[in-house]
Structure formats: structure tokens, C-alpha cells
Amino acid sequence: MEYQPLIHKRSGSRLPISKLFGAICAVGIGGTFQYGYNLSIINAPTTHIQKFINDTWYARYESQLDESLLTLIWSIIASVFTLGGLVGTLVGGHAAAKFGRKQTLLVNNVVAILAALFMGIAKPARLYELLIVGRFLIGFNAGVGICVQPLYLGEIAPKNIRGLATVGINIFLTGGILTGQVIGLREVLGRENTWSLLLASTAIPALLQLIVLPFFPESPRYLFIDRHDEFQCQKALKTLYGSNHYQMEMDDIQKESQASNGEKPKKMLELFFDRTIKWQLICVIIVNMGQQLCGINAIYFYAEYVFKNAGIPEQNIPYVTLGTGVCECITALTCGLLIDRAGRRVLIIGGYTMMAFWCILMTITLTFQDAYSWVPYLSMSAVLAFILSFGLGPGGVTNTLTAELFTQSARAGAFMIGGSVNWISFFVIGMVFPFIVKGLNQFCFLFFLVVCILIATFIYFIVPETKNKSFLDIKDDFQKLNFGQGHENSQVIADAMM
Image (cartoon, rainbow, N blue to C red; front, side, top):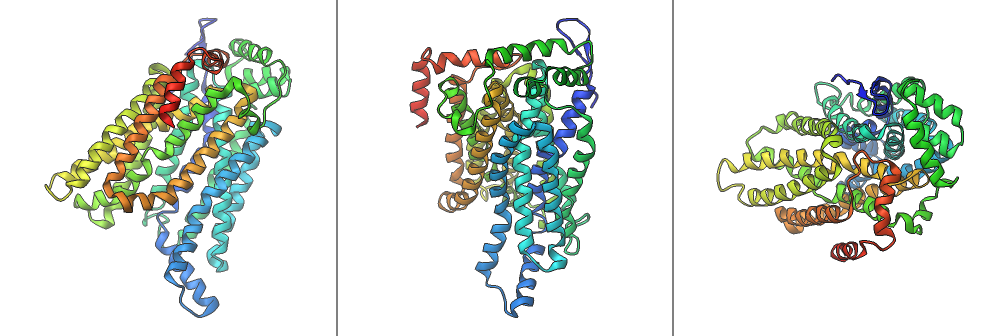
């Protein structure tokens, strides 16, 4: 895809964005790409890893491993990634505020390389415990990346393409998922004798970022507002935009700095007691919960069942699953192209609304799955349409909103809160979802229908459009809610959400 320079509003000349595009790629390859990649590669070698655990247990104790204990060990290996992600989010926010966004991302790659080493030597060392350590560490790496990458991108991009820059987060995430699905195929590294190489391959994106990211500057906003280093800030802006085009962003940063009155970065807990950002914080918590509670995990859970009922041979299902990865990549790219034109509200409200519709269709088609031969194909279409709606709306816009709703002093803490909510919701839905499915079967989508409608309603009434607005303008929009004006509307919605 060719990126054309943008028109600089003040000078009328073209703003070169090749360096900015390079920075987005350099940050993304070691950020959300790692998250998506490690989310998907663990699925392909499931049976091979379980066999390895069984064989290791027998070699140690000369007895067969109990089935329930095997399930427990495998569950720990799979789910400890989530625990690592939560810890990484909390550490990443503090590190980004203290040491800088770029430095935190660079050091984070050392964690990914260590994780790859542990997972790569687990099989030859006959220690399945190393898989647990490795998965925790790579989860930690993903948590730091998800927290710091959008923080960095939201601060380096000019406001007229800030949406496109931050949607790069989701583009790399979906690209990571798709790459993991491809690398995990049995023709590549998904075989019994190569699964350890598959898990160790997570070192490659980390090494790439270590090589490439040093060529790009630290966040100019961090340098000026947090470090009070005007010279390095100007140098960073000139690197990103060129000597003829940096002044407009410099003026915007100076205005934000003056408005902050030298305020230091706030700690995560301090944000909960700050009345000036009360509704921004509520918005971030709700949209991050929505990403996990909207039913996207349920769709993936039912995808294999739907594909089987459509008559697709079981051995070919991994290739069909690639179609879901392709769908996510397409919608991430589409969201990136539309977000700075259509706006954030249209995409995220429209996404949740469409997902609610597909929830209804999924409930109906799964209920009558065996009634007609064409119904499974309708279910298959609904699965792909739900994924498309998610990627175009909540999947692409959530991180953009988190980056835009806060000024510099609160932004790092807000990403820690949003990331923590996301990881905790991820863990909770992973634990509770099997029971929801067992109790409700296909009617579980009615639960997700209600969630999607409530979140869309909340956003419609509470969240203002942030397209082409400075961080100070967005803050001013929220003051009406935070300090009483428009309070009646906000209270009605808050009561409805309770």
C-alpha cells in the first residue's frame, strides 16, 4: 500500500509521512504483532504439547498422567499468558512514564527473547515447566506492548491522521494472528518435531524491533511535557515531519504543556480520584470490557463447529480458519482508511450495532442448524460477518479512543487501567465462557446481544466525536459531563448500565 504525503494545513505544502509510517511499523512489529502471533500459535501444537507432557511425566515417574491433571497443566500453559499480560500492562505503564516509551519497548524485547529461549529448550530439556515460564514471559511482553505501543503512536501522530496511526495497533495485531495461523500449519512448523521451533519463533519479531526501532525518535510529547527537553522534542519532530513541517505539532504540544502547568504523570490509582477525568475513565473501562464481553471469543469457539456442519473436512478446517484471519486483516486496514474520515463514533457504534444483529442471526441459525442443508452456510456467513463488524468497530477504534481521551499527565495511567480491564475481562470470559455455553448453548449469543446494545447506547449518549480534535479540545468536551452540565443525560445512561 502506498502512503501519500498529507497536506500541511498551515503552510499548504505536503507533509511527508514516510518516517511516521516507518515508526508505526517499527513499534508494531514488536508490539501488538507479538500479542496476536502468540495468541494464535499456541492452538496448532495443542495435541503435540499434551503428548510431550504425557511422555515427560512417564519418563520421570514411570506412570501415566491422569487425564484431569493433564488438562490442568495444559490450561495453566495456555492461560498463564493472560496473567503475564496483566502484570506486563501494570509494569509497562510505569516504565513508559519513568524511562520513556521507546526505551520501554526496546527493553521489552529482551523479555520476548528470554521467553522464546525457555519455550524452545523445553522439549530437549524435558521440562514442560519451562513452557509455563515462557508463556508467562511472552504474556508479560504482550502486556507491555499493548500498553506502550498505542501510547507512543497516539503521541507522535498529528491529529488529522491520529486515528490511522493508532489503528495500526489493530492492523499489526490481526497481522500477527494471521501470521501465527500460517506458521502453525502442519506444512510449516505445526508438526510434532517442530512445535518447539514454532513457539521459539517469537524471538524473530523481537529481534527485528531491536534492530529497527533505534532509528526512530522518542515521543516528542513525552520529551517536552514529561522531560522538559525542548531541544530533543524539536529534534524528534523534525525527524518525523521534516524541518519545514514540525512547527504546527510543536505549537500543539506547547499548548498542552501550558495547560498542564507542569503537572507530573499521575499514578494509576490517582486517576480514580480525579474528578476532571471521571467520565473519560468510565468510557475507557467500558469500551475495553466490551472488546472481550461482546462475543468475539464465542464466535471463534463456535467457528469450528459451524465449519464442520457446513461439510468441510476436519483436516481442512485450519485452512478455512485462515479465512477468519484474512477477514480481520481486511477490516483492520479498512478501519484505518475510514477512521479519520467517518469518525470514531460512526465506526464503533455501527460495529456494535451490526454485531448485535449477527448475534440474533447466529442464535437462529444454530438453533435450526439441522433443519435445512443451507443453514450451516448461513451460520458460516454470520461468523465471518461478525468478525468483520468487530474489526471495523470495537477492534479498531477502542485503542484510538483510549489514546485520545486523556492529556499527557493521565495518558500512561489510563492505558494501564484500560489494559488491565482488557486482560482481566479476557481471563474472566475464558473461565466463565465454557459454563455459559454449557448452560445456554447457542442462546449465549442473546447475552452478547444485550452487551453490544448497551455499549453502543452508552457510546451514543456519552462519548463525543474526537476526529481532528486536539487533546485539549477533547478534554473540554468532557468537562460538561465531569462538572455537572449535561449531568442528567449521563446519569440516565449510567443507571441503565448498572
